[in-house]
Length: 291
Length: 310
Image 1: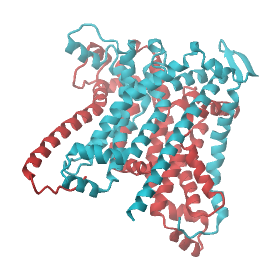
Image 2 (image 1 turned 180 degrees about the vertical axis):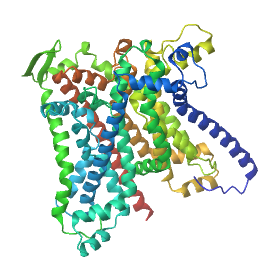
Image 3 (image 1 turned 180 degrees about the horizontal axis):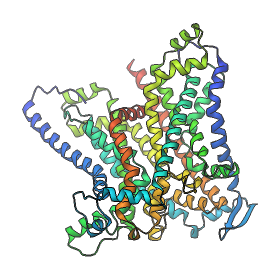
Image 4 (image 1 turned 135 degrees about the horizontal axis):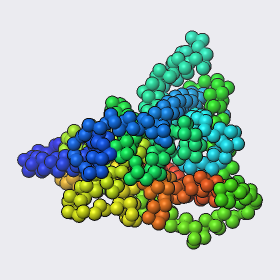
C-alpha cells in the first residue's frame, strides 16, 4: 500500500500500527504453526514404534525410525521402494516432455505467422478448463484397446499436450523473447529447429524450470488416472500404495511403518520445495497475473 | 500485436504437430468416446457377465437422476465440503493478502508465504492418509482430546458426518489458503498505489481503504478465484477417496461426485460412468463460460476507464 505520509498525528498512528503489527504477526504465526503441525506430528510419529504410538502421543521423537523404515521396505504388499522408483520415472519423464513440447508449441504460436495461429491459441485456452476426469472413461477404454494397461506410456505421453504449461510459456515469451534474436539466427544460417533447441531454450530456462517443478509435483501427486491404469504390484506409483494402505485395517498394521510410508510420499517433496521455495513462490505469482 | 512477421509458416505447423496429435489421441477421442458411451448400456453383472453395449438413448441419464441413485446427494456432499473449506479459505486469504501488501505494517512476509504454500505441493492422497491416521482412534489428536476433556473413550472422528466432512474440508483449506493468498497478493499489488496515498491523505482508516478501494478493485480476481475453486471443488477426489475409504464411510455422506464416478469406472459400468462424465462436463463448461463472460466484462470496463482518463 501507500508509503507512510502521516505528518499530523504521527504519534497516535505509530502506536496504532505497532498494535496492528503485533496482532497480524500473532495470527500469521498461529497459521504457520497450523500449516506445519501435521508434518511435525508425522515426523515425530515416524520415529516411534507401533507399541509406543498405541500407548498414546508423546511430543518428542523416539528411536525406532530405522526399524520402521526396514518394516516398510520389507512389506511385500506395499513394495514402497518400487513405487518410489516408479513415481520418479513417471514424474521425471512427464516434466521433461511436458515442458519441452509446451515450449515448442508456444514458440510456434509466438514466432510464426500462419493461418491457424489465432484459432489454435484460442482453442488451447478453451481446453484448459476441461477437467481430466471428464474424459477419463474414454481414456481408460482407449488404453485398454491399445493394450497399454500397466504401461507408463498413457501416464507420460499425454503430458505433451499441457495447455496450462503452454499458456505460461507463451506469457513468458511475450515478455522476454525478442523476435530479433530469431531473425539474427536466421541470417546466420541457423535452421529453425536448431534455433529453438540451442538458442531459445536457454532464454526460456527460468520458465522451463518453474513449469518443470510444477509438472513434476502434479504428476507425483496424481492419483485418479494412474489408479485406473496400473494394477500390477510392481508398476504402482506412490498414491496407489497409499490407497492400498488405507484399504487395510489400521489396527492390524504396524503404525510406525504406516507413518514412515506416508512420510516417504511427503518428506522428499517437502524438502525439495523448501530448497526451491523462493523460485516457486515467484512462479505462482507469475501464473496469478494471467487471471 | 505489432510484430514483424516472418514467413516461415510451414515451421509453425510442424512445431504444433506433437501437441495437437497427442491432444487428439489422448483427450479428444476419449472425450467423444465418453459421450458415446453415455448412450449405451454396458456393465458387468457380478463382476464377470458382460451386458451390452446396447443403445439405450437417455436411459443412463434418467437412471442417474432417480432418487435411489442419490446423485443429487453426492452433488450436495461435494458442495457442502467445498463450502466448508472455501469460506474460511477466502476469508483468511483476503486478510493475509491485505496484511502482506500493507506498506505501513511492513511485515516480513517471505517465510510465511513459503510455509503457507507448503501443503499445496504435498500429495493430496498422502495428506488424506496422514489426517486419517492423526485423527484415528490411537492417533495423537485423540490423545490430545482425551487429555483435554478427561474422557477415557476416544472420539471416533470418522464415524460422524460432520467431523469426517470437517476433516476433509480442513485438508482442503490447508492445501489451498496459501495459494489463494499469493493470488490475491498479486492482484492487490497491481492496484495503483496513488489511490491508497490519496485515501490516506483524506484520512481513511485501514478498514475503509480495504472495503472501499481494495475489494472493489480486486473483484474480478475474487470472482476468478471463486469460480476456479468451484471447478476444482467439483473435481474433489483424492482427499475424500482416502479419508472416507472410497466414499462408503458414514452412510456415503462424504461421497463426492468424482468419487462416485470412480466407483462406476472401477466396476466397469461404462454407461453410467459416461452419463455422469457428460453431466460433469456440462457443469464445468458452464462455469468456465461464466469466467470467460466475467473476465471479458472486466476488460471492457478497463478500456472505458483508460478512455476516460485520456
